[in-house]
Image (cartoon, rainbow, N blue to C red; front, side, top):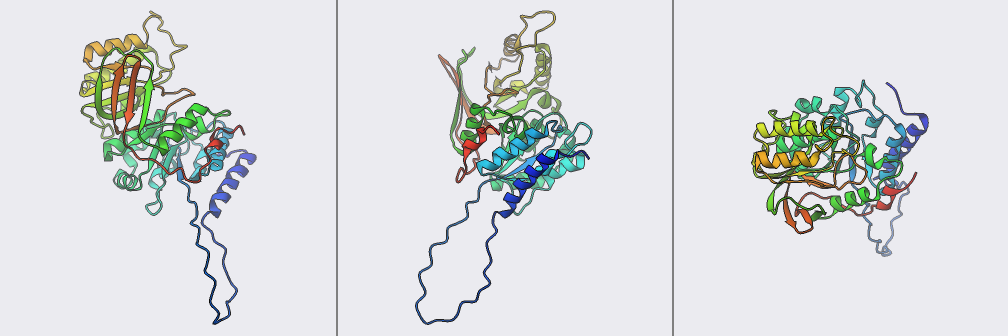
Length: 367
């Protein structure tokens, strides 16, 4: 099995060595002689600062640049997070980040004794769908709910997020991934700030300065993710049935007509008409034009979906395969409201992580 270059392996092992020292206390071997003199009042014991444990998972594509995996580990470690399962970052099998059995163990190997506070996807690609029938959802869903675990990622990781919602009603986060975002040569300050804000504080409100085609105030479960992955899960046990929700969608590398075709599939399956609103994020269409009609754009598609479904469609939500992205919960209640300048999506309640003892400035460091 190919391995990371030696410098990367040394850095990862050094990170593991640091994590391994947490919780170790020096032993005492000297006996104390009996005395009748009053003992001094002991100083109060200071509790150890236990920072959130991140379980790194790599259920999809391999990580082609080992240096980015190293950057991601270093930044999160320097910020104060304790990382678990980082060996998954160096795995290789065909186009995947390890064999199906190895990638499955990323999830089924999570301990009941000390569940992670954050489950962080390494990157997207393809492969998560292959694992869905074999993940122990009956154990993991109650475990994540009890521990308040934040499950975070996007792209192909949408398959895991939708399955959590369908199998156990477990919310997750659309947010940065270890390789793709934390491991960027120069990380986005906006993305890192959004991650810190959404993962440690609530409520959360995201405003979009995009003139709305509808006047609306709607409340519902905000759910969704990558359009390609979501549309391919329709009709399976891993696709949640959401009534009166707000469906969020994003994608990359798809022409407008392909986007419409997938939306038509969701419409014909009855998914779109059950929603109170549809929110479209970024589809990275800057350099993609329709071969027959360059004027056939995402807005054209959105307008057609509005007409055939009667459901309000909003565009411009700041998330997708882009450098500067929001972080927000999926599978949590939200309110979408419009006014003269655009629209906002507000999330009143969702799981968050402790910020105690963390140095978030390290997340934007240039290594």
